Image (cartoon, rainbow, N blue to C red; front, side, top):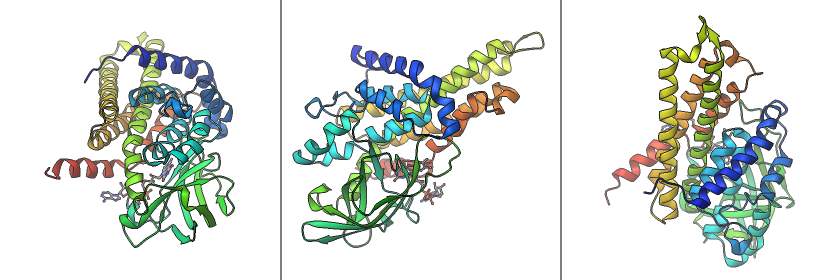
Length: 380
Ligand SMILES: Cc1cc2nc3c(=O)[nH]c(=O)nc-3n(C[C@H](O)[C@H](O)[C@H](O)COP(=O)(O)OP(=O)(O)OC[C@H]3O[C@@H](n4cnc5c(N)ncnc54)[C@H](O)[C@@H]3O)c2cc1C
């Protein structure tokens, strides 16, 4: 694998870095405090063509690769984990199922409006009684002529209420994975309701909550892929989604590390900057090494995806390693800040709270280990 970025990739990384530092960073603490959805920043990201980064030019996007997507998400997460997950879910699990499974008509209907930012995407798989065991989901889709009628409740849905379009997995057949189909449900459809945003530990400003279906009528032509392939649609989406979550974790780790390095050089104790103590130097060295390794694993998975290779285990390994890294690196960054690290006026504790979610969503890290082991042990 070539670990050097192309000129185009460097250009996109630098453009996003500029946007992140000039527009997002000054707002990040306030978004965390208020918990308000940063609609203006999503709009600005759209005006920079970031919302259609993996959508082909033919459908109004920029048609870039997944390495560029990872660079984009890392730069945003290095200043705001909340905005990173809003944009990540839209770009990966919210749009890619349409790219991968949509008919020409479906692509033409939704992708241009997703690329322009008119429609934000969301992905609705999890239910109150069906999390890691996604194949046990209960939301029902009953066929009635040329339509399906959806009933059930999804929970923990990122971009809930703000999204204009939901990729929804629902049961059209018998039990298990084969009885599941995927649908695109547009916001505004009668019977589609939203719960109150959940009060989370972190990622405040990224709305998460229930999406409720009460006799929601969806045209059969809004089904993605053949009937019964919804579980495959979801698992494929999560493969590339995990590249995004891995990149988000790299950004959170890097953001916290940068803050800790700057603080260690300013803070004086025992008559010298605390950066001069070997105890902290070794912590910083370990943090930097792990964040770099996580980034390379993310790029490895993204590059394999772009080459059209099987990258399921690479994405799971990257997600597992990067998110565990983000968790301990952000905890150590708080430690380097001492008592000030524990105070909300300093930005570093936000990174620690935001990092925790990355070990849980798009498959917990226990589930990533199951995916990796299954891929390695399947014997072909
Ligand atoms: C902030 C946030 C945003 C989210 N956004 C979305 C979204 O946009 N769309 C969506 O569909 N979902 C979303 N989720 C849901 C998320 O994907 C689930 O929370 C996750 O898959 C775990 O499911 P669960 O919470 O039901 O936990 P459970 O499945 O009940 O797991 C509980 C514990 O048991 C462990 N466990 C379960 N099964 C096994 C096993 N076989 N072996 C070992 N350990 C196991 C888990 O690792 C975990 O530690 C989001 C969650 C959060 C917190």
